[in-house]
Picture 1 (cartoon, rainbow, N blue to C red):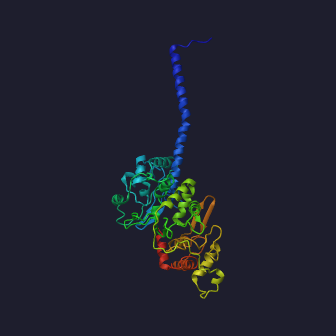
Picture 2 (cartoon, rainbow, N blue to C red; picture 1 turned 60 degrees about the vertical axis):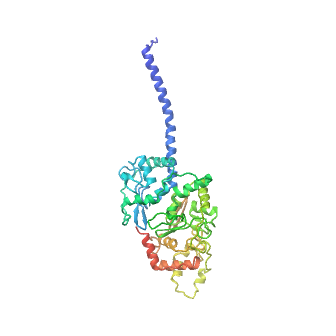
Picture 3 (cartoon, rainbow, N blue to C red; picture 1 turned 90 degrees about the vertical axis):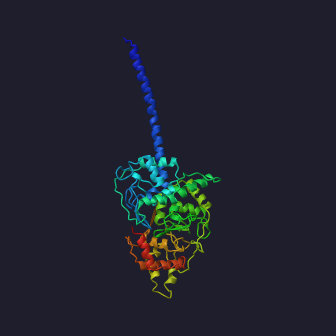
Length: 435
């Protein structure tokens, strides 16, 4: 027999049914909320990739984003900081405002001033939406690592961090990115990537006495420790005017452009950790913007990729007048097996003619590459050249004189013969590679 439910019970049941219905509706929304959060994190991951955060904030062999990477500057060595969400040694207790201030204004936790080795002068223009995504990624998409931060050895007066207030007054533009009048969406996107997220000017723009970017010289080439970041403006001789779109695309995606150049050192890290992972649209935007950058000339009289070599294959070198040429002997024993006897290269090993490293007006990149080797990973392809400097493991270490001799042979045989160096030049480059 069915019992009659009282009015109060009926009311209670009705309330419960309404509450359950509301809860069910709320639960149905949760997957969408999680998906939205996940989408934001993934957007932040892409922004972090475009900003190349991994390269500088990960020490060789270290945990991702845990810091400790040595950044060698003219004023001393600075070690990158831990930017994992670890609460004690990382940025786990950073508020959103503190995170924004660190990335865009160079002001860390408790008001500590950051050095512009962290390129906040470029990141200052990053949009609010991208900063929100970046914050979500570093809070939720990165594994926390409790690793202590290392102190640098920056020289006086640059060691006085409060002095960064004056430096920022001189060089920091805090305006958020906005397209310029008449600028196409593609070029605007390329400018946002090149000038801000990828912060190309940090290396490719020369510096003043106070280490600020030289006015009117944007992307015209600069010394970066032992390396030289070349001119990437549209100048026909010093810049990249002769590089085709395909050349630039191949270089950014693989680190190699046939008969133009290959990425080594810091640029190899950029390709490995950043540019190869960009979308095709973003790569095309970068190229479109670089084509729009005003040409800035230099003292160079000939394009660095135009040198065809002196035509001295090994069989000719064996009968040369001076059989005691140490440079040829070192090249034959240590280089020819990969780059071939006539320097023509094979497979992943580039030709030494029509090469921006051997045809440059300085020998920095050639010497630094011999000292440190090359290690670059793009997709399933790994490119490797052993180091012949102090870090040599699988080959004989070369002395400063050895490297000077083989560099001079390579330059006069395959590249720019007007550039010749001595052992002191190599020794200087070696110290610039040592933290």
